[in-house]
Amino acid sequence: MNRLRDWLDRLTLYFPVLLMGLLALATYWLVRSTPHLEQRVQPAPVQHLPDYFMHQFSVKTFDTRGQLKSEVSGREGRHFPDTDTLEIDQVHIRSFNVEGLLTTASARQALANSDASELQLMGQALVERKASIDKNGKQNDDLTFRGEFLHAFLNTDRIKSHKPVELTRGSDRFTADSMDYDKREGIMLLSGRVRGHLATTKAP
Image (cartoon, rainbow, N blue to C red; front, side):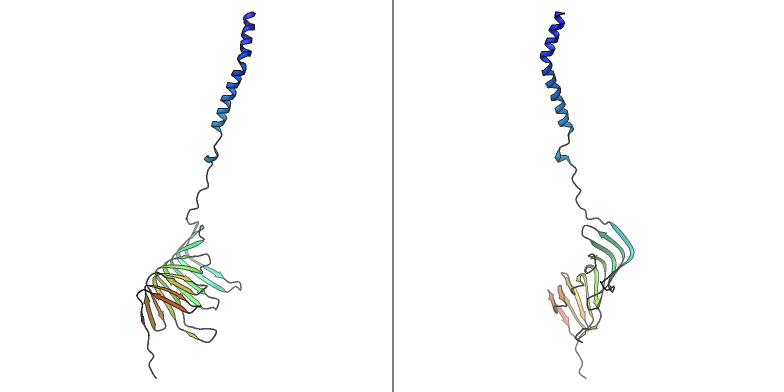
């Protein structure tokens, strides 16, 4: 009986120590099992990948009056959501400016913004505007741009290129290493090796 009482006394004496040890083990296990904040999954970076494809397609846009503003067609198109651009193979484009004048463009490949008002034409690039008469009654000759790269801003009637280009206006012809043409400002800037041929008008 005395031995049992001694054993119980000893157990009572060491019980707090045993309890603290169990609590320490439980706390260690919880710390190991809880995920760290830095282990949270980070969102994947946005990738430049197409979200849809088009084959042998034609896309038209219209202005607020329902008039045709532009038509883009191509053999294949790839839309990139991160930049909201359309990459087009064998592209053909028709675009009308605010005055209703038609501009056509074509190239082996193009990169267009969402409404096709800005185009980067690459490979046998061609931009053409037919002869017209403006609101002041002035005659505008045919205007043609050719090159391996043309950057066209159709809404603002501007065409740029940092590569060699050929410009034809009526019977006149110019070549240059680079170009910046602004129709609204009436400015044509040709840089590098510039050559020109002006057609002469025969006297009656």
